[in-house]
Length: 434
Image (tube, rainbow, N blue to C red; front, side, top):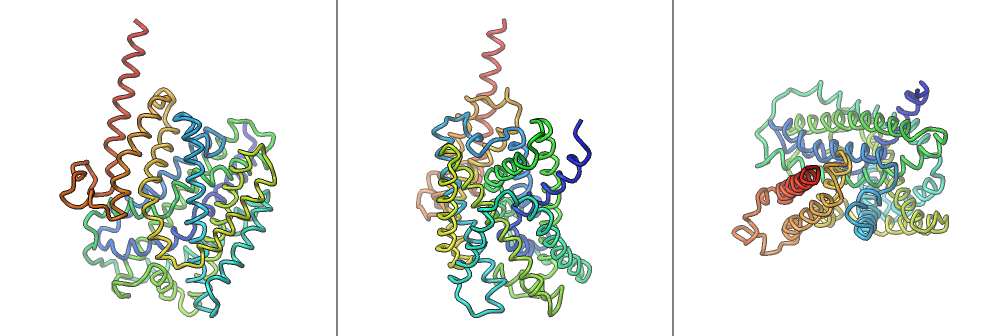
């Protein structure tokens, strides 16, 4: 029987920590503009966005609860070499793009409006603090879960609450041609699926530190329950931000930037103190995400070097230095640079998460290898499209791929291969049983 305190206090602290580690720069600036453009179809856009930014990350945490390992365990059934390569690519992307982006967003929204300091100075000070927290990782759950997340939630609820109760529910026509898929693809930019396999490992390690006497089943129940709570919180906040963005459509110019829209929403909802509240929100949400990414990366590299503290230190320093270098660029530039990488690594991540939450008899090593290989192959056209390749232009030879026009050309081929390989496997099993 799991003790009551373990089922309640520890679960809520872990859920708050998960929410805060997920809720970073992209989670703040993406939903409002998505709602701003979605108009009368904001609900459909919300479903698409939450499919890739809530459901898939939640399943990633549930997979972590089952595996109770690191990101390396997600791809082991393909091969150890693939899993290592995938892990290194994910961590390289994480510390090179979403982690620095948190510093960039913090500067544009929390520093630049009040101080005439260069973004490089912000980036240096920001990642110096990140380094301090990363080197004191045993305190992450307590600090993040008990102090920072409640503050983030209170400020967000204030902004969303004022807007949703102050504006008339009259929406213009949507600016999206395919609202649901636009929502899905915008959810890619949150990096939350990647975040699930990265920061999920941080939660596993922290849980092992704080709950040394707990069994595998108890830890699985704790992490699973915390994941559902965090997922519900993300869904409600995303829905509120998208709805708020849709409601303020007529209050701003059509070409307003992501950061400009969020700042404007804070001013509309909270008046003269709106920017101050928003500054606190941005600093807290972005900072905790950066800490989670750098800590998760350092944990993984240390695990590859026989738990060497030196490897952990070197990785933490490297991650923070990359953050300083990339964090001085503006948000739009970092988002543009990230897109090609996302179009190939995100589908692979989604497939690995889904396969790891399925019953093992449906996700054998053969299924993993075939489905992942198919996903990689059919993600290449989407990757090439972001690079401007003529092969994927209108009328190109790759236009025949189903859903390619929505940048989701990998979905149906991966599903078909999954069903075929499983059908063959069950046929071989039934044949051997005769």
